[in-house]
Image 1 (tube, protein in one colour):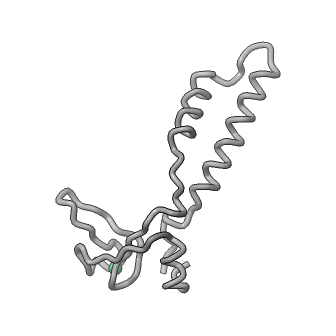
Image 2: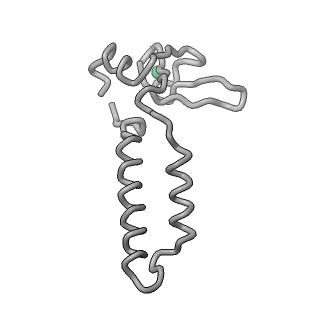
Length: 108
Ligand SMILES: [Zn+2]
């Protein structure tokens, strides 16, 4: 089974962006004039402040047939499994990614 896009850790991404932001601010502070566009820094700061979602505790949905998390929602709000193309609105919900991985340990 191919690796799906859901495998990246949003907490880690957020942490790395925060580090980059701090580095940008430090660079500007240490120079005679702002090297990095302060407008970009402000935008990045706003995004990081707004996105406080704890992705690790968000519920996840998977296909009941192949257990894939790779689902797409069409214009009529139907959930379709991209992996097996075998299901339409046949999904099961897990309280978090950890519940899912606990139930299907081979899905890592
Ligand atoms: Zn499926």
